[in-house]
Amino acid sequence: EPAANEDATVEQVRKIASRLEQGFSKGNAAMSPRMVGEWELIVCDSPSVAYNKGLTGLGRLVPFAKLDSIWQILRSDGTATAMETLKVGSLKLIENRLEGNYSSPDGVTLEQTYETARLGKAKLR
Image (cartoon, rainbow, N blue to C red; front, side, top):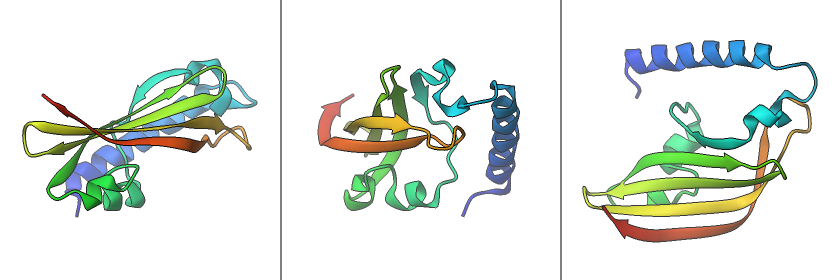
């Protein structure tokens, strides 16, 4: 259960995102060249990400795993990479990568389809 201050933070982020969305030119804002780049997810209120402890569900399956970070790379050719890092204890990190494409059928929503996954690449800090 999130704390009250986390709920307030999520609401603030939603308001900021709404203002940013209004700043995009009309048309296909989700496919704007300004969306191309590397992005770190800093706030997420997705029930499925919380339940699965990440994007892939591996965080839910690995004992004592915690979601450390989620990044995505959106490229101008429509390809995308999503990366999640899981922390297990204090030393071991597990990196998962999903590779695929992104599109926007309605000009607002960004849809991502992943075709390949590289799961469980372990590395030491």
